[in-house]
Length: 173
Image (cartoon, rainbow, N blue to C red; front, side, top):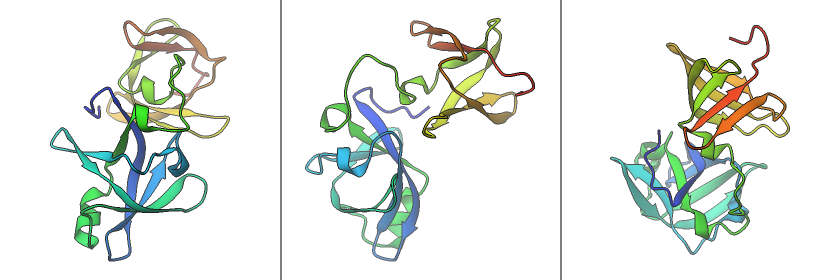
């Protein structure tokens, strides 16, 4: 999956460049710009290594997006190089995010998804944190499918084998 060190949590994705001065539009997941300690760096993976960037300025744009200026990103070309990349933060630098034992959607990335009979469906590769209706993106054969995730559908969760079994609605696949 992401290959990020375990002390880093994926918090956002660079959606697009914005303007010509290096500003980017980032879509946040379960955190928001208000959860970040702006004195701490965020990280973007390059060649499998986390590269630190400091947020020089941030402006919220809606409920889950923000316009960001990062150190060293000064023009459209720099910003375009970041488009599609994930933004990470150190878990201990997130002010509004608890570090309890409950699994988050983020924690399920890379897990195996199985049906209630134990048959492998695919690997969980991403998620959509839709309020009240979170969904998982799962590889299934040669395609990616979106699977709704509701606690009533979960039949087994095995952290040791990193697998999640769910009772799929008929006809979903």
